[in-house]
Image (tube, rainbow, N blue to C red; front, side, top):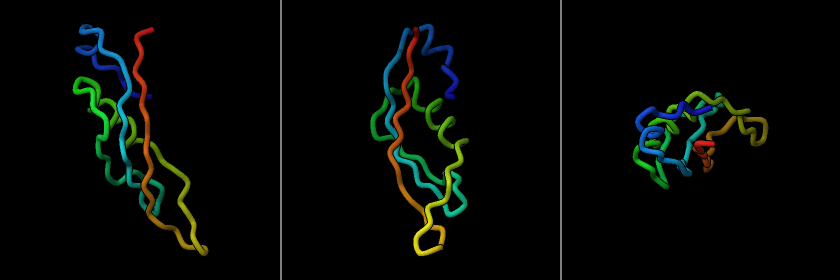
Length: 77
């Protein structure tokens, strides 16, 4: 889970950060790009996604890189 930045909590900032992640042949996230930004939350979203590990995508028995869109929600409830 993403770590809610204290400055964002203090400022009562919440919402959705949308990222595009490139996953390598080993299932680990290699690159992350912000598609929809909330400046106080972007780094926390990126850091969380970079820790995730996916099942490798197999095409004809070979692992391939793939790109996916990730939505990270931040809520102060």
